[in-house]
Image (cartoon, rainbow, N blue to C red):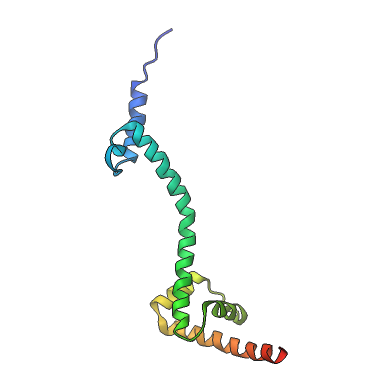
Length: 128
């Protein structure tokens, strides 16, 4: 039986790994064995952080909304409760963008929410 030479396949695989590891520090970008380990780890980080990114952005949106709402004398939790009561269907991403880019429009939203909170708050105070 004829012997199978695999130099071409191996070289192609090594080239592929080294191309993907371009930009890594030190031998991680030039040495195949080390590059392969770093590349596998980097792909794990990428997979994990695609999910972490969603958490971090949500936290950022909440911080921005909280800061903008406090300028109007409300807290974030009361504002979100008021948003739900008033039937305004905007998610945190949109609210954050409005608060960041257009404070005047956000002030109108806060006024609408404040009116709902005040109307609802009085009935709760009487019941208690």
